[in-house]
Image (cartoon, rainbow, N blue to C red):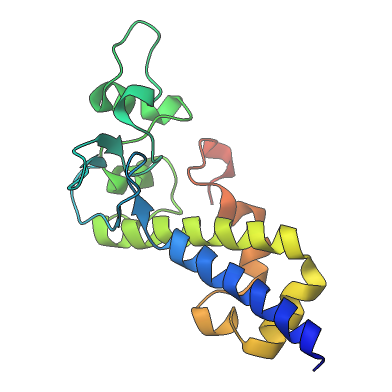
Length: 171
C-alpha cells in the first residue's frame, strides 16, 4: 500500500472510530460531560454543571420542544410526544407502544438507542468518504465488521429513523 493511501485510510479509520464513540454515549449539551444513562426516565441532570436536559434528543430543558403556551420544561416536553415529532417520551420503554422496532424494556431500549445513534454517525462518515473508500476501509481494517455493524444496515434509511410516527409503516 502506498504511504499516502495508508495515511488517508488511517484518517478515515479515525473518523469511523470517533463515530462509534459518539454514538455509544450521550453528552451534556452545556459542558459536554459524556456518559451513559442508566434505567429510569429520559430527564438528565448533569453531574458536572447541573444542567437539566433530555437524554433522547440531547436538548437543554429551556430549548426542548413544548406547546406554544407552555413554559419550557422536561415534563412539558414529554406531553403528547406520541403525536408531536420532536418531543420525547419520559421512558424509552414506552416508545415500543408507538414503534414496534423498539424493545419493551429500558436496558434493551438504551442499547437500541445507542445503536441508532451509532448507525447515524457511521452513515455520516459513509456520506463524507463515499462508498468505495468505506468498503476499502472495511476490507483493509475490518473496522465495520469487527464493530458489530454491517455496511447494509448503515446504508438502510429505516435504521436512521429514531421513532416511526407512522403506524402504517410499522411491521
